[in-house]
Image (cartoon, rainbow, N blue to C red; front, top):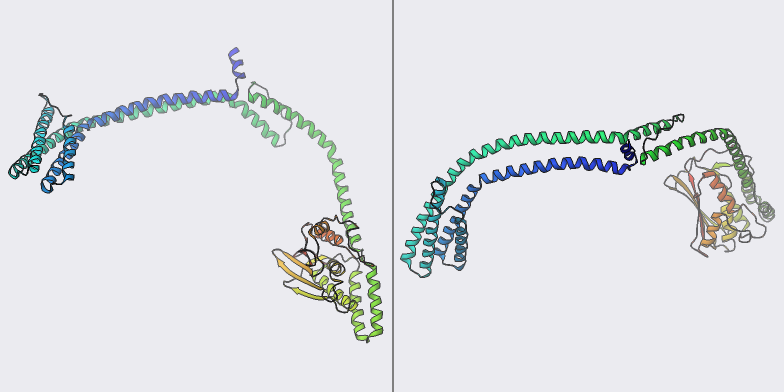
Length: 500
């Protein structure tokens, strides 16, 4: 009982490490046994044909000696002589491994004969080389012929011994292969037994460790499905799993308490949200209506005064055009309920407005219009473009004495239709642009010519942002003082339907 209690206190990492180490040690011991047995089998296989390999090496070595000797006798070059000495030394070292004593074994007798003939062959080859270096033609021819005959005899003996060894070794190799197959079968059985034993050990040992985790996972799954009425789990150990189980039990109790609290506040919160939504909708509608009513009464007075003066000075036709444009302009402004209009209606309003201004200021304002895309079905809030043009005139080009220009351009930019109003007036600093876009411009900083309090840029920016629900729907650009200003409005291709 005391050992079980101690085991429950052992950390989970140590338990799992112990299981892994014990299983690994078992597999390691089995592998060492198998590797040792395989190496022994391989060594035996290598030994079977080691004699044949040595005899093949002898054949190659004596062939090199014969070829290098012949090459030197024919050419008498330093390189061929050096190669001869190297090959002769190599062959001399190899024949030292052959049997040199008298024995009754046939294989060893053949080795002794090969060794003796090889020693005689090397002496004869050396004599031929010395005779050639001494220019004794008769002697080096005799020694060369003798060496060649010994070379043929030695090759014959080596081939005979090699064949005899190969026949004997083939029988041994066949027996080794049979033994190796048996060893393979035994090794496979041992490996399977080791794997099975280690698997059963790991499964049995880790089962006791993982079982609480399975129960914990099952309870957590019930919690995930929304069943918070499950019973708290029994803590069976004081390791990491026991700690997690205790924390899980506390979490279940806390969740139940939290759910009860949520149920109490849910209805109250829902009512508050509905009330906030109604207030927000009412406030937004009030903002739109209030912002739209801020029209400049002084402009109306100045316009009508200029029309009266023109009627006195000119014929009725021009006065009619002027009054007609003025009427259209104010008719557009006072339409009830028109908070959303077509973009083309807004552009038409700009045409009327520029006409009126040029009558008032004797044609001092040069106006260009460029419609580069289809604007049918594009909607926007009413009275947006006219305040921008008015702002360009009052604060940008009014004092330029006939040099003022305003360009209105409509173009496509991805999924947006862009309306650009650009003047060549006094321009704006980047600091002023940032304040206008952020609505931080104070009353002292706002330029306000006498008698002109038209709908300001902050009004336009608020309405466009409310309409598009996008803070980036209005942009202002200016390169600095006396370099003009450009206002760009980005609208959706289908912004809604015009109010009737």
